[in-house]
Image (tube, each protein chain N blue to C red):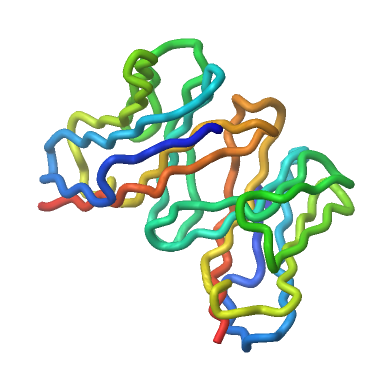
Length: 112
Length: 113
């Protein structure tokens, strides 16, 4: 069965510092992988997705993620955190029947 | 409207009452989904529909039912609400293949007392 594990339920970074959110996946078939962001009291919004076209995927708001098959990972990074990046981030993997399996989420706080 | 709308925004409900959460999309997407979001558990799939007229059970379907009479609407019904169904509920839709992302509505915050 397809699943994802997000390492760390909370991450705190200083404004201007690197943001690194970790996601490892388990999939019996080549996966499609997604990162979503959820701002307070809102629905989820797609940040980026991996669909096998390129291993380094660039998304919105300066985020990017690298697919590493050997490590079964799809970590999300942003070189310089901004206060507006404070949100909850979810990694997801496609599952049979076109469903998504989500990780438990990582909450990012940004310190001034 | 553009995207997905959900109603109501929030609701407080007495245990044992029946409740229908509404979801409408205007993107003509074939697939629609209902999730519940609980702290520390991420999003869990309740029910889904790959096309109008068909539905399927997700990870946590017990106590919930859905229907998909047309492409645009995908209501979620709690026949007899229980406190453990207190959660935030999100509706989502998707077009095309498994590589396409899901689009999410703004959510319904439901409290069952």
